[in-house]
Image (cartoon, rainbow, N blue to C red; front, side, top):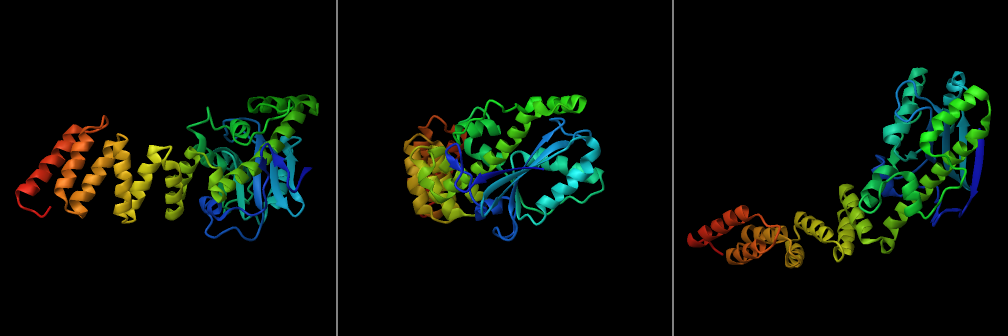
Length: 342
């Protein structure tokens, strides 16, 4: 087993590697029933004999990162040959015993299912079966898919964390061939960059998790699209007041954030506040905002004349739906003609 230690306060690019406890919102996103407590949070990444998975693919290198009182340590379990896989898996199980959460990047699709399959093939219990799992790829896509060419870890690492890889780093598609060359020749020189690649991936996971937590704790550091994405994420987690604050922070730069804020206010029963946003959005050319205002004016405030004005304003917007607006206008006119209050 190879062990590499990074000191407390170490950074990866612009971001610190972080500390031992996951933020409660990240723990909830990971599926934990309670905030982080007890065992360590582990960062896991594998290097494998194939990129497509399947029963013939195994992990010849398993990296595990963990914070402790001295900093951040990466431990790597290397497989010198397939015949030693059972021993490698047992060592991995011992390393992760008692973990309170596991952090990966695309681990839900690749790393964890692959390890689960390998444990099953050897008749061994999966040591991570009940451990909450935080896959940072899902959050990265939420936050940056609009602004990055892709959300691969190396792209996020370079563009978001401000970190660059060393010249020894090996692209992922080269990794299997280098391991098979090692098995053929027993020359390990081609694996030096693979081992470094795995270590850097794990350090990047810790720094990226730190980046997410900084965005949560210090919203002033978030760009408009990040604040908007954070609002969507927080609303999904049930943190409606936090979500609303993030939407409103982004609303001046992103109409869609203002729209989401207005709909959340509507669900909370705060129609007067929502109406202010609908008027602002409507003046910016959003027909749907005028329609929402017309609905409130008709059904909640019974002000049919004001609702007709809003419908007419919606009809002036380029994104309007004329047929639907005409139906709404005709209904309002009938209600007025029938002498309903309004």
